[in-house]
Length: 201
Image 1 (spheres, rainbow, N blue to C red):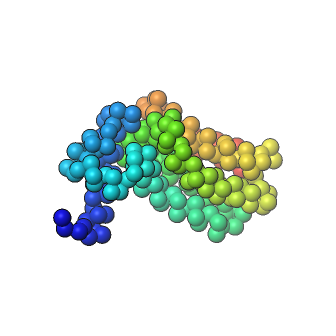
Image 2 (tube, rainbow, N blue to C red; image 1 turned 135 degrees about the vertical axis):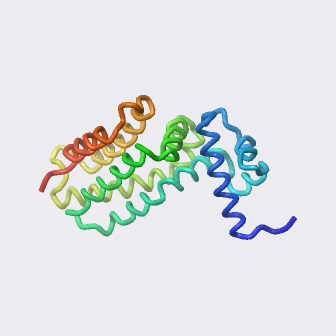
Image 3 (spheres, rainbow, N blue to C red; image 1 turned 90 degrees about the vertical axis):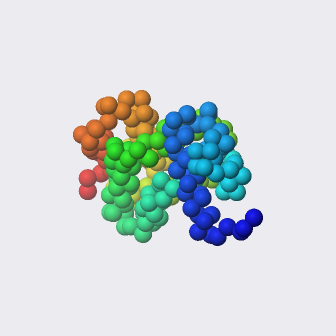
């Protein structure tokens, strides 16, 4: 068999991720098999195992692909001054919640992610990634506190907890009641979390 080029391998990976998004959205995470994803992509199951060791790794890759721009924003957080950090944290939350309004891929992956967070294999696979995200957020909120911009009733740890709970809670409420999730709702939610976390210095 001819050896695949890097470009062909990358194209195969993109095709598998697109197929996984479609099949997960249709069948749900638990009922989807890797064979179904491969079939949807017009590829063999071996093609999946070339790129992903299991279904948990595939879900992680989907989420990483979608959140790549936000990862860049988090990396930029470390270069901001304490006065700029609240705005940077709010920008990340705003983009996530606004994207959920009208991006079908984001909506599909939020559904998949909510299912995956009840899966022990997925949680074990993503522990290091989640720990690193928490570490970055904690550093940001520690700098915000040191600059005098964190609400006095918060510690950096409680601020991280609220920030993550706010975003994940919005995802869950959208999933259970999408009709109530509109632009006015998003703007109101963002205003509320901003007041809850940051002083208006």
